[in-house]
Image (cartoon, rainbow, N blue to C red; front, top):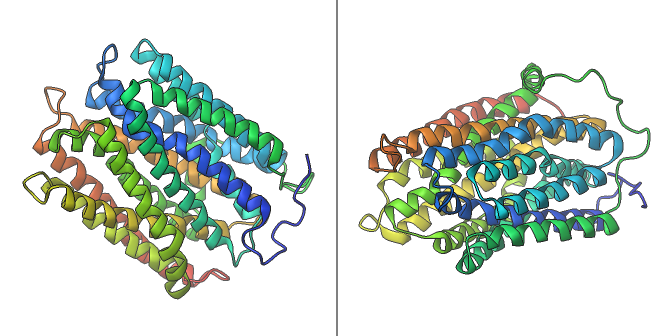
Length: 419
């Protein structure tokens, strides 16, 4: 398979390798996006009968696996190449989705989530691939386009899940499995490699994931960026887990309706990351854009408990989710762009792997905390549990905003990154 040997030497943004990896991410995120709105409803059905807390654990276990394995896969991608790691992750996703679809017990559903999480290193590896094929000047644009692919995936994925759920709650998982397998086959034949033989750091002693994360915090700039990203993902994962159960409780929405709501969120993400982000990042820089994004997310999360059919109805819900999605569209790509810029060229996979490992830890903690907060003594959702869940997520985002304000100063003092 030919290798892409002109890494970071062209000022052109949309090179063939970048286009191919963006399409790969898009297809992968369609499958991933299908699972989020359907999994809570799926787990509540017979024979699973999962409680809100157990549903939170289903979300968490996937990310616990990513937390431990994402840095390993990132380092493997630095040494052996991006293609084999991406290929394995896509095949693993296909197996995980299929196992959930055929599961006859809640234990097998958990097994499917575990397999998908272990091989789910495609996020950090895809980001490292984008760093490989973009210049420092174009990297923010590349990460913005990467985020836009997330948005596109979350438009089609949840919408497809809603449509397919009409034919059976298992069907979306089978479709996601087939999509991942098809994506893996296409990647094998058309995606060029970007890592040059012998051009990366050799393996050192393998450290515990927690130790690696703590060690990264000693680096003032990267550590601060990592903390903000961790807090952002924690809050957003609480919301992602709670959103479906919240709309089912407060509005009476089913899987199909929630699929369309998540599709709407994806559309706003495209507008935010694909258009607004590119314009604003040039004018005010990544760190200040992060502060704005955190503020929008904190305010939006605080509003959710007040929403309902008699309190603004669907219109208020869509407006609130719009501001939340735009805030995330500003902050998330800003932070990944900063992390890439301050990392050495031969450690992009390791650095982004550590960052995504922290994000996986946040995605594991968020739904676990959300499951505890949203679950009452009767294993149900009520007004009190809704309020404490979303207000906890809002508080986390206010703390993230404070850390982002601090990051404005230290990043400005760190050359050559612009604030």
